Length: 237
Ligand code: PEP
Image (cartoon, rainbow, N blue to C red; front, top):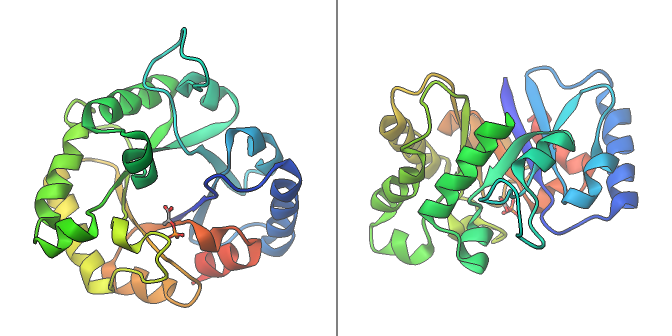
């Protein structure tokens, strides 16, 4: 079963989220064989994006590092789980770059997800500068350090998202993805339930090749997940 996660980022109020869900529901019928679908809307649109028939699951795009308390503006993992999230995206490169999130904070967020019963979708990936300096492997090792205290028996999703490929219109090559996949699996071995996704400028046109050659367990999709038709086309690929 391949996993396809739609990261809507800061897009879609409740109306468009409802329209997306209605369109996706109409076109996939009973679901897409071999594909697990996950929508990650903004917190405010979780309810609107929900599928009562369970053909897709919900993820949040972030959770607070703390459990509860005086943290104005934060949403806890328990709150996200209570709102219906099965998964939580943690450590997206936009959170790392724009909000200064790093290893220790992300380790706490992963722990909060576990306490709340959510599976983290932990995002890692090198910048263009790190890639040019041949630091990709070291960067991935460093970012995976946030999982050191996470019990290896827990189900985990890791999304390899090279920063230079996100929203760039240029994805990594299937060979890049295959190499990253092997490297990540090696570092995290022997995890019992690990799925490794690729993310970065995935489209209906490149999805099949990326999946086939890299042997990734699924895809994390930003821009191309904003339309139900293109998200569906990627999942059918
Ligand atoms: C993302 O934001 O996680 C992402 C993969 O974006 P895009 O597909 O637009 O590159």
